[in-house]
Amino acid sequence: MGLFMTVERTDDVSYGDMVKNYEAEPFYYSLRLFSESEELLDEVNLKKRWHHPLVAEIEVKQGGIWGVIYKPPGPGPFPCIIDTPVVDGRLCKTHAPLSASEGFLSFCFPMLDEPRLPKTLEDVDIEYLSKHIKYVQSLPYCSDNIGLYGISFAGLIAHHLATKHPELKVVATTNGPGAVLSSIDDWLVDGVTNGAYIRDSLLKTEHKVEIEFVNSGHVTVIPYNPHHNFGFNKFVNVNLGFGGETSTHGKV
Image (cartoon, rainbow, N blue to C red):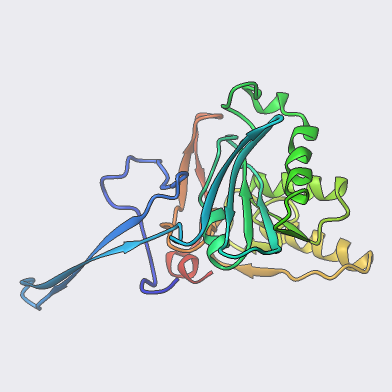
C-alpha cells in the first residue's frame, strides 16, 4: 500500500467505530523519528489525496438517477467501474476517485437517504439500481467495457445486477457471497466456501474466473484504510468480528 506496511485505528476512534471516509477526504500523516532514548529527532507531515486534482467530479441528479461520476482527464472513451452501494445505502465515494486516478471512468451512487429514495433496504427496487448502469452506458465518454465492484453486501448486489445485465464485462467483489477476492480468516462470511463455490460454478459454465484467498479479514478495502478486525453494526445492534491480519490487509 505504498509507504506504510500497516495502518490501524488510533485510540481516539470510538470503540466499534470504523474509518469509512465516505467523502474521500484526504488523509494526513505525521512521521516522527525518535532516538533510542525516545527523543524526537525529526518530523514530517504528509497528505494522501483520494481525489486526483486532474480527475473531474460530476454530480448527477436527474430522472431518478443519483450519484457522482469521476472522469479521468481527456475525451475518452474510458472503461468504467460502477461502485455498487454498501449495506447502509449511503453515497460512498471511497473507491471511485481512486479508480478514476488509474484511468477508469468511475460512478458511485446511493440507494437510500436521498429525496424520493427508499428509507429502508427492503424497499429498494432492483430497477432503480439498473437505471444507473443504463445511464453510464449512455455517456459519450464511456466505452462498452463496463464492470461492477462491490465489497461484502455490495458484492451481492453486484452479482445480482450482473444476472440482469449480460452486457457487463466483469464483476469484481470482495468478501461477498461468491467473492472473487476472498478472505481465509473472515469471521463474518465463510470466504473459502463462498469463493470456491462461485469459482467452480463459473468454470462449469466456461467463464473465465480468477480468485485469490488472503488473510486480510472481511473488511478488505482499497489501500490506505486502517485494518478493522471488528465493528459495531447498528442494524442488528451487535459488534461484528471481521478478522484479518493487519500486515496482510495492507498488502492486498
